[in-house]
Image 1 (cartoon, one colour):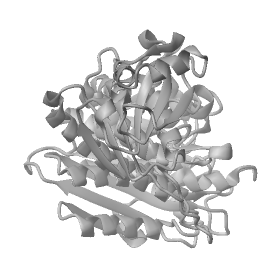
Image 2: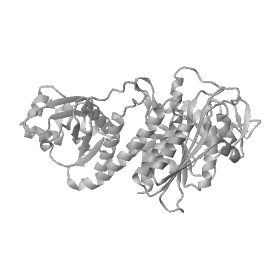
Image 3: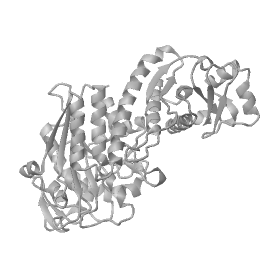
Image 4: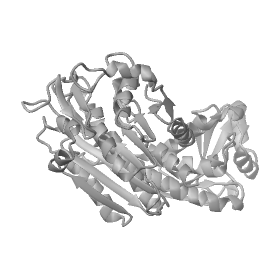
Length: 496
């Protein structure tokens, strides 16, 4: 998709479609008023007749509007003007893109970016609009034998600002948004591939491909023999039941000073999770291909960082494996020694994500990181607690947690912080090992983070549980690409 920014009167635009807003109670936005004036009240006359009220979700497509150079004028209902907040704006933009794409227009000029939103400037509105457009138009048809192409696909969207002095800053916003959208697409594609294609080896090849295509990225892939030498008994306890070899993928982006401590992102890469010997119910088990979405988000984020050439050091670490039941699989009650030297009693083999993450977090210490953020589809308990709307956030460093929350608010990719109190740690006590890998039914998301915190001592560390946000089920089943937007906004905020 080609995105542009411009200023100018809507009635003078030679394009396939101009998009303007109508507020509730049949009130015209400023761009709509300009078209209405040029067309001698054509729009206001239609609205008075009851063709449209302006409620959010409504639309009206007009052809050959007099006095207007565009082929079409698309009116989008925006609801009450004073009630347009961040979420409402995103929904309005999403509606406009969905409808525009169905018109057959190859391009469009969208004036909805000029809507007023409290405490948001044009740069924010343009960035959001571009990301939303790409997200809305995303399709995953690569594996269909009859990949039906859109008859007249939308190819170009131009967003507007009221004055030319806004153009320069908004052009940078488009550049950032396109890079983030590309990273989100990569994460979604990886998540949507089935596990017979997207194996640990496949993830390693994708990381290698990223590094090959960008000189600022370097990659190192550790094999199981390498991990064994490092003492990663916890990670290897998960992979031992699978015929697919585990990989530890390290992707480094270093363009800033060597002395600058890197941000380290650790992504859970379980390419299929049966639960192991503690096998899952069969219902919706196909969705366990999404258990590598944490890994996908790390690769997507590193891709976006490299595309923008940001002046910061970032390291991505992806422990990748399958979790399968077999004669070689871990049994409940088995005890393993992690890279940190701590012993772990595996009471439930379906709590495998923390077993691979803990060794990856220990490995991250070799980089003397500024912060470590792990991203994982870790617990069903997080879905129960927060649903599909917010990512669970737990951290041993409150300033880091606040930065992540603020970044999520800006990006529209929100997180919600849960407590990480010492009182929860006792649920992980084991009579036979240093720590058990589960803490019982109560507070499952919190005790999972408590487990990881044992390996993140002396680090400024945060854990993002994306079990509820990494993919959607039902008729809209598919990976969301979250939290690439959140992570990128956090990184962008660090270099401002």
